[in-house]
Length: 206
Image (cartoon, rainbow, N blue to C red; front, side, top):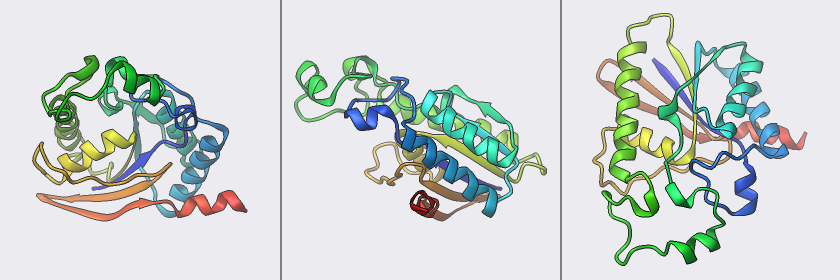
């Protein structure tokens, strides 16, 4: 089974330097163009069987562009939503730094700072998604290539779960606007084919 993991395009919060998380901002005009390019690239290079997406607007709209290009329906899954950042959601970063300064010594994995989801619970949500995902689709021979559309933070948690890394790991992957990853599952073997491919964005200049 091959899994294409796609981050959403540029959102309004990216331009306004806001904490996004569960704040439900739309894609910008550029973000829509990025998503359309990603959809065309996926159509040209991979025949996908299903699209799973976070229901937050920026991811859902990105998934819609991919769906339009590929003709594949979308299944929305709340477990793919971005980190629940509680009272930080939607705040300008400068405003958040004043209202909710980081605790001395930094945020701990168990902290629910500013009424947010703890990192442990965030990781548990990713693990819950993977467990259900593998159990459901590994048995369906007609679902061999699946596209997941989500968010930068959640993609990192999915990556850590996929690679079976510990909760307190400092390993991260970068995912730019509509960055595409390809991961492969074959029995107990898990492989990373590529990370954060963005060659489709070259089409923006044509």
